[in-house]
Image 1 (cartoon, rainbow, N blue to C red):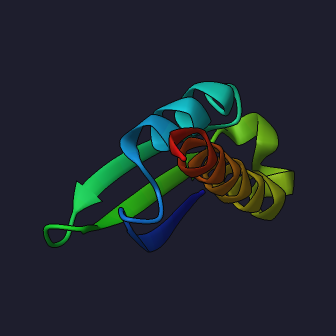
Image 2: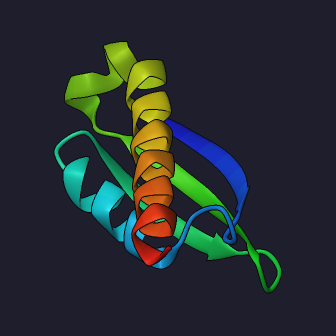
Amino acid sequence: MEFYRTVDMSLYPRDAIYAARLAYKDYCIVRIQPVTTNIVRFAITVLPVHENNAREVVLSFLNYALDKSVETVLQSD
């Protein structure tokens, strides 16, 4: 099962995405497709074993990435 989300990279630094991809590697595969200079499209493929909870996996991945983004911003201040 695959989901697509378009996001602004100014909200999601590369380090945050890397951390989220690593944390969720047992749940989903995330591919990043550039759209414009600052906009990318996440193609999130939920692994078959977690398809029954696909919505929760995708939302949890995005929340984790956003949390890591906030940590990055707060640490830089």
